[in-house]
Length: 164
Image (spheres, rainbow, N blue to C red):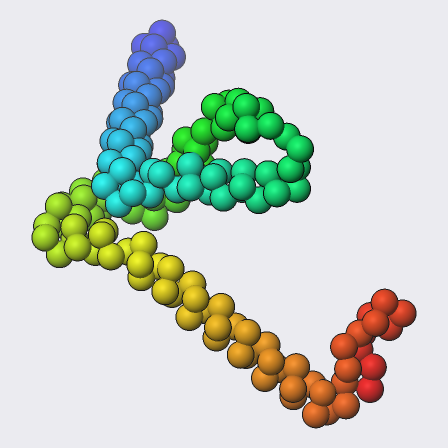
């Protein structure tokens, strides 16, 4: 009778050790994916996005506070880093790519065509944003024209649902 509880305890202990081993392996796998994601972001220049966004944000805020001296803006820029957004973006990579896929992407970006893609990406992105803005503006005008053709006008503060 004593051997049955002992066998159950032993089986439970083995199960716990297996589960703990799986968790350690999973954590190591996630750490490797995070390392690869950081390497990929660095290679593609994505690791500088936070500083770029902060620079643009600070410039915009600075216009609203023209009396603030440059020394204060320098102090603010020293206290805020773009690394925070990078840390927030890492899970997007680790959730969407396996470690093997991240490594394949890194390997690709080391090739001549991968390096060219990285070099051209800012230009392509900027052009794409302009194309998208122009397209969106044109489509908005078309939609508004269709609404007006049906007798609808822009809403006023008194009539939020448009007038016919």
